[in-house]
Image (cartoon, rainbow, N blue to C red; front, top):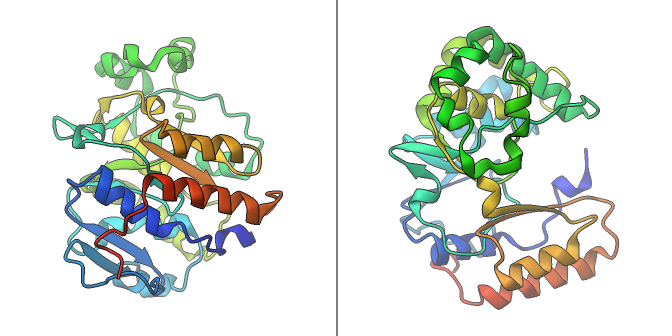
Length: 296
C-alpha cells in the first residue's frame, strides 16, 4: 500500500479553518477515522461529531483499509442529514462557497457528462463494475430523454461532447468525475443498497482495494440516473492538483484563491517533498492564518 496514504503533512487544520471561514453555514461535521484524532482538535466543539469506523461499518468487515468500503456505509453514520457533502482528506475549501453551490431545489448540484474510458487503469476497471449495475437498472436512452435539459446543460460546454456523440448508444459508460467535494442525498445510498446490497456486501470483505470493488461513483451515478441532481459545471470552481507534476500550480492557486475547492493529490514520487509541503503550508497560512474554533 502506498506510503502517501498514511503520511501526515499537517494540512488538516486548514480544512477546518476553510470550512469555518468560507462555508460558515455548515451545521455539522462528521469526522470519520479508525480512532485517530489530531492533538489540536477540540472534540467538544458542538459542530463536530467524531465517528469511528466501528460506529457505522458492520463488525465483520473491520478492520478495513479500503476506502471504498469506508465510503459505502456512510449513510449509516448516526445523525447524518439527508443532504450532505462528502470530503476526502485531501479536499480543501479556499474561497467562499454558498449552500447553492452544492444543493439547489433540494437536489445535489452535479455535472452529467460522459468520459471515454480506455480501461488502462485499475480504478477505471472498478468503475466498470459499477456500470454493470447501472445498466441493469437504467435505460440510458430513456434517462437522457427524460432529463434532456440536465444532460445537455449549456454550462457543461465542451465537456458535454461525449453526451452528443454517444446519444444513440444504448449503454451508460463512465461519467466524468470531478475529484472533489461531492453532494449527496442520504436516500441515494439507501436506494442503491436496496437494489445492489448483495454485491456491496460481498465486496465489503476486501480489506484492501481489489479489482472486483464497487466504487463510490456507483452512488453518484445512480443519483444522476435517477434525475436527482441540478446541472452545474463543477469544473468551473474546482481543481485537482496532482502534486507530483503540478506543485507550483497548486501553491499559486491557494495564494490567489483561484478556485473555491481544490484537491491536493499526494504521491510517493513527489520530488523535493519537504519543500513542496512547506510551500503549500505557507500558502495556506497566507489565506487561513487564524485558528478555527475546532482547534484547541
